Amino acid sequence: MINKISNANVYINGVNLLGKLEEISLPTIKQKMSEFKALGMYATVELPVGLEKLEAKLKWNSFYPEVLAGANLTTATNLVLRANVEKYNPGGQLTQEPLTCIINGVFKSIPLGTFKPGDKVSGIEHTMSVYYLKQAIGDLQIVEVDVWNSILAIGAIDQLFMFKVNQ
Image 1 (cartoon, helix red, strand yellow):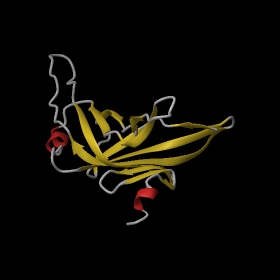
Image 2 (tube, rainbow, N blue to C red; image 1 turned 30 degrees about the vertical axis):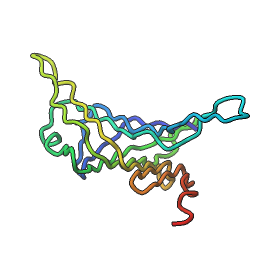
Image 3 (tube, helix red, strand yellow; image 1 turned 90 degrees about the vertical axis):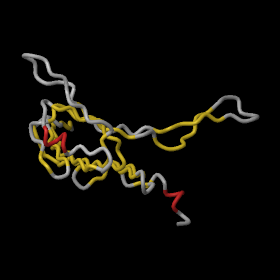
């Protein structure tokens, strides 16, 4: 079976951005590693010590003052991405399942763009520092990261369970 996603829609604080985003780059979940070597060990190993910072990037296709006015640098913004995962086999399309990605964080900057005669406005790309991320396909949770509440779940497995035993 082959999965295909060919489009998506994004909402910021509940406002539909249909046709306004050129591209969105979701955060990459990357382990932060620390080197460890002790007496008797033949080699150095890397051990996990947490996650690298999470960032999302939103690239706009034009200048939208209502979006720029809502891009607060100190208050968290909610972003929701919705798409359809189309599933195919040799007989054609079988099903569609909803893909949802929920992000919460703050914008790191407010770019105002580059203006040139005869060209479309370019360079309007927001970078968001992400505090919360949840992605699911249908009822299947793929990942959930909540920096403030020490949640890291991959699939249905709580990766930080051992830290919560005595709470």
